[in-house]
Length: 181
Image (cartoon, rainbow, N blue to C red; front, side):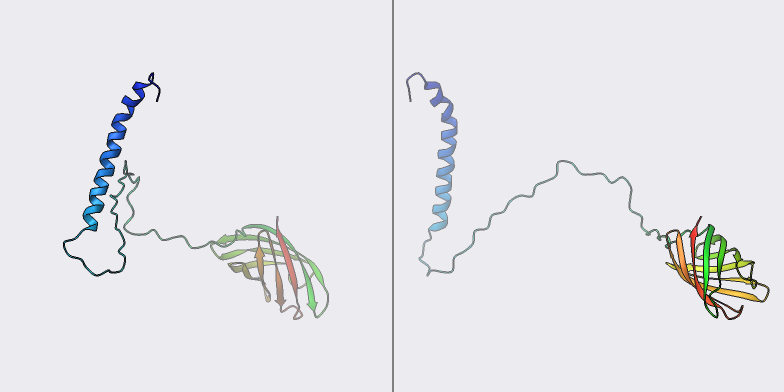
């Protein structure tokens, strides 16, 4: 050290003294652990256990609302929204290849459907009432007009539905498809 830097030595003294004191305390502690009045036979190496005090949070969060003692029941899943106007086509597969169009007007209450249907292309059923159900993506409904009925089964995906039908009008069966207007 150069003679013009005596203040540097003075500023290092407290740190140096703490380091010496800590080293001496550690040496005494280790020395006390390693000595005993009697000599014991060697044993398996022991593992040092260090206990660290827990870290305490500086602030405790305050809950904004007390939890409910009774859980609130969740609502039942709802069926796709079919309410409104639908336009579709139908095509017989038996006994002939007759085809036509239809329009539906649905009202929906949960999984229950009701409304009216107008069918073009067949002399058996031109209009009637419709009732049915929707479960998940499966739909089932029927149209009735006097003695003539049509049973529709199918699937719904978004604003489209399709499936098969059977009617007492000539024992016709076929396919249908509809799109929401």
